[in-house]
Amino acid sequence: MSKVTELTLSEKREIAEYLVRRSMRIGRKSSGEFDSVSILYNGTDPSCREFALMVEEECWKVGAYTLTREYSSVRNRLKHQLMPEESLKRMDPISKAIAETVDVRMFIGEEDDPAWSD
Image (cartoon, rainbow, N blue to C red; front, side):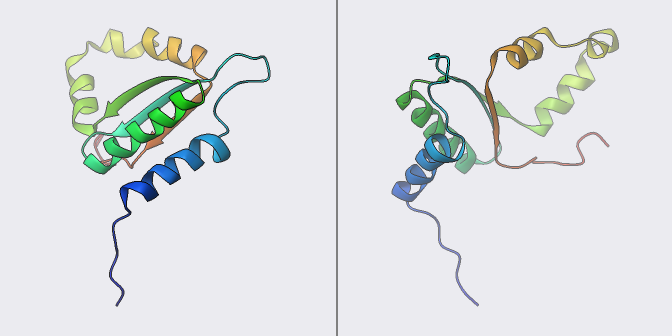
């Protein structure tokens, strides 16, 4: 049985650079403006935070604007428990503004509790 090895910091940075520059082609748009990037990451996994910040730094290197946010199923569930139903039925104005502004969206990591809404 083979042993799984952790990536080195250098390898992680190389992957972040490849993701931003080659895979997602983040940077300057054909209009001359720079991309706006939303990075949402699994806040329960420290390696996701580490990689998300590397991706954010690579975005900055190509001139992109970033909004980096932590995600947690526990916090999302709590939000849905605490908010009044009337508020939950409406479009979140912050989410709407992000959707109208952001060119690139990415989620780093995985859903930490896929059954949180059960």
